[in-house]
Length: 202
Length: 386
Image (cartoon, rainbow over the protein chains, first blue to last red):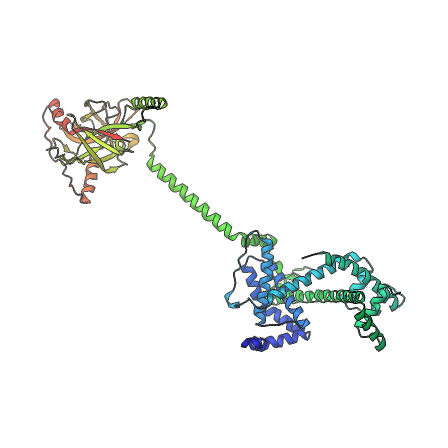
């Protein structure tokens, strides 16, 4: 059966090269990919009563799902990138539309983008939503954390600053002090984070 | 006793691979043995992973935004030159659509279907109203108040009383009531010997059953053949099987116009008996200057409508149609030339029964009583039932 090794059979060489380049952190490859499929998604959203802004939001969200999966190395693509992106963006936009509209939503699909079902996009979008929720909780927890803990943790984890820089920035006498402070902050963050994250059912 | 912060320091060192061999083995053993510690470690790694992932996502988002802006900028290079107008900030290419326009576009995109349906309903409503008004107008031609069409509303008072009586009886609980029948009457006269009869259109207007009644009480059923609403003319045909024909008609239909001041007369049934009326042709146009009509100075009454208007020599010159209420003795009659024209146009359509208009009159030169004696056999009551 041809399903045995779908990756090599249905992916074009440029797709493979693109994924490899993006995984390697090549920003030009990402930009190329982004530019390549933007017209398709923008057309789809505009056709289904969306605006240019909606299209941008949906597309960035969709590319983000793709990008994070590529970077994790957890992407299992059984179709072209184009189809995958279309399926993901379609799912995202459908979700937004149904939340906005009182009526049932029917989407106008571009036939040429073919079988957008069974691309694995559905599960990926769900996983991404779970991830979104986690990040949203984290952001909220950080907001509740208060200074200087918040800046310290953001500096270390989000902005990738070194402990030395942070020590200087926050005026600690040495790196060990800063580190201790960081751990204390982590403990507080943990309480906030898990309190919010676990008590919120989907 | 280690605080939670101390554990975190340990965990961080462990996950970065900074722990030396024995310490690492020690920790791994404790993680395997102590579920509470394992849970604590899992929480720690989940939190730090989430933090890192969150940071990465923010970076990636920033990156994508940059890519998008760059892409838009590349797509619309002419917009980039805008800062030359003296603006200190950069102009975002998306701003070329004004806020109002964007809102309008959103509205249009969201409500396109609704707007379309509403518009088509509105258009249909407008056209239906116009059409309906037009139909209504043509069916209820506005008759000026001072103009009275002369058909006779027979016994409507009596009928009403009868209906009232019926209602009273019904309240008593006895017989079923009769359906109220409205009855009108006018005058008509023979057009051809084969059984075509002319009357005014307004006499038969709205009727569904026509009865022709002669002087000696012969009765015929008739049906309308053609109506000329504009000139108030109607042609009927006798439908009875036993009807054989009128014989030769004593009068001719004049196709030209009559002259001003001619002595004219009419016969009609404003009441049960035939009534003679005499006068002269006082104008060659009718009510409000309508040139299809004559004005004559004959006293006419409801019921005279459809009666023949004859000149002195006994030629048919018109069909009595109405009178003006606010003028003394001003009656109107359709010119016979319109009747001739109407018959000609019907003849052109090759009907089953051809129209043979009488060509020569036999009334000329005789005295008026003799003329009337011959004429009255061809003048009928037209009874109309609604």
